[in-house]
Length: 419
Image (cartoon, rainbow, N blue to C red; front, side, top):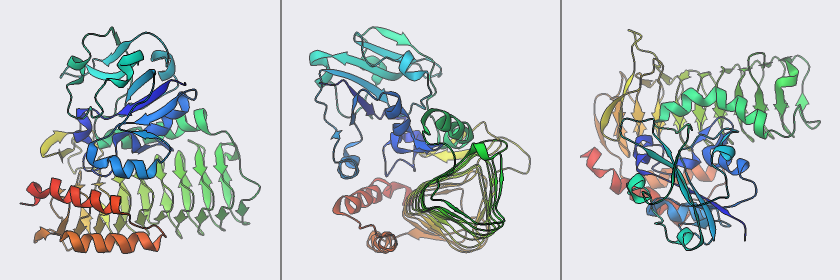
């Protein structure tokens, strides 16, 4: 039997809300790949199992029918923290095989964080399946401890700030096919700068007037992407398969756009998950959008304070100083903005909220909220589910019973915020 690498969520998943209401932490994107995909590609000789919060389990099983979810059947297992932002040195620092040990990162004032646990024999199946509430360092105190220097994602802006470097790293480590596919259609009048640093998949169409500028970093474009005339993309940048980049779009460096997205206007240093739309003019900077989000025409966000100071945000009910000068919008899955919406620096929007109206809305908008600066009320969960079904159907995706159950659970989990 192969060794198994098992990803888990630790108690600090709450720092990544609202993005992780709908997914485990290891399914967040940074660069070209998700945190999980980076780890998987470093440990190719292992099977993979997934541990997550119990209310996420049905959706995770649905998305990963061939994987063990919240169960581990292995005699050798390496449990890995899902917040690890893996680089090429990880597999050497934390080998797949070896004696039982706990790997710790001690770079926080709160004490050691468990990065990984390697166990063999009966220990492999005897560990808890939900680590999200466990004080991990104490739980594994009997094991030999090894301190390692690894990068752990703490907050959403860590993903945004690391995105450009991660695009570069993902290309170096994992992009096997370099160059432009023979099945890509590039019209006359397209300008490609530093062509050797541009990777384009099969079936993609690049229209006249497009500029692909890879002088300062790679540009990776997936399959069946359509880039409309006069769009400009500066690397490092990633565009996922089946996405559209609209006429005259300005996609600046350090931006990742997932699969089946429609993006226009001005975008800089952002991570946009799959099935999200920002089709129209308007600025989006240093922001992170979840799946199924839609920004109305001329939606703009601020990502820099007028006094150039450090941006503070509300994360899981607490104000946190990001220590960063640039922080934009963080938006959970299924949320939307109306036309001409303005988001202030460091605004956080929960899951399935609908934001509209003049003036700046609050800097923290709970999940299932409806309104804006003048008034905000609870978004009826039945209406929210009905809209989500219609939005998903337009992309030929069916909302399953597990999807619906998850959104209802999030509605209940966030009721206190709307009160």
